Length: 291
Image (cartoon, rainbow, N blue to C red; front, top):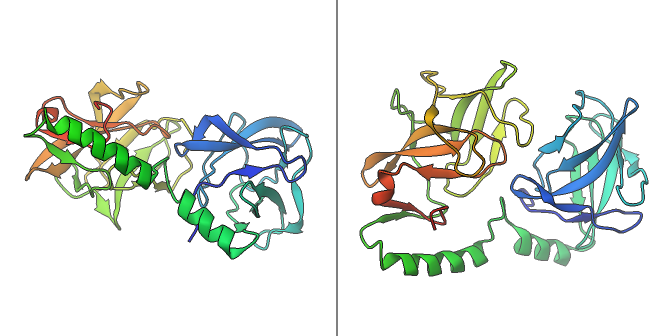
């Protein structure tokens, strides 16, 4: 029920907010904490999206390392008395600003976590008011989109609008095979250290949920994005991301009974996507940067 809701937390000791609006993880404000392990100290930014395990930290945390999580305000250790039922490491406890608490395991790569509300009415209200992913608020966004569409229709009467939430039928531009697998767009990716893995992203326009078989650090770029069938590179050499300047990949998307070029950024955390200049004369992406 609570997958992909954005949780807002505070320190259980001093009561101060732990949310950071400057460092975005999963396109939403992050949870800022200090950490300590093996005589090393650093700051970590955790995703506030429940069920997401993405984070950003300058120091690399070894697999299975037990980490101390510390409040950046009162400097207290946030370790809970309860141990993880999966690996026996200490759990870390944070309080939800809306009431309740969230716990997660202090061992790197252990995915044990839980959220507890003070009462069921709080849980239901929280879910309805905060159910979103990637800062997509359906009620506010739909009002904005309808207003924009109405204004643009006056000058773009002949253009097709691909609406937010539209399922994008994606194909490899080299072998023409579908990139859709289990309702996700599947890519073969290569990190800069040479390691290969698979990245699965949502095929729905402006929905940014994703998962991968290898760890990708937040804000890091990948070396290559390939078709999982023919293993040809999808990287576009002549264009770069309009938002962050990183390399982009090109896939083919079925629109207006024909195939169009669709571009995505290779940098994790960047939500830019777009069409070619040629296709923009006939097609508009709803809530696109051009608007």
